[in-house]
Image 1: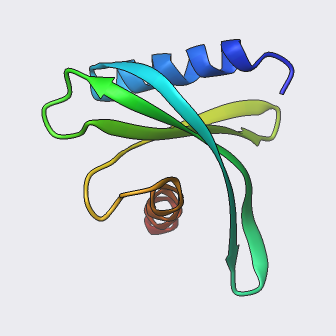
Image 2: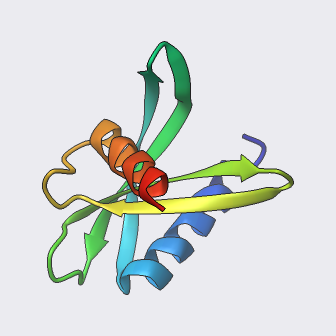
Image 3: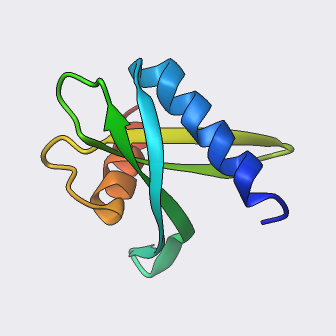
Length: 98
């Protein structure tokens, strides 16, 4: 990634807008998810500690290319979400239901 600091800043802005709280970057977690023999995600999910959210202490966020636009996803760590992998799976399920 060319400018990871700007990417992290963008994710923090998305978290703030979507969930109404501040965040601090904790770590970057590589995730590879396969569904029915096809890779559905092979990338890095960023982990953030949250400040001021009433239900969650942590959030998982990442960006992906959709054509020539970058889209961002921020998933709160609220059961059943308990890791970067389960956050990714929840986002995939949510998108599939739309």
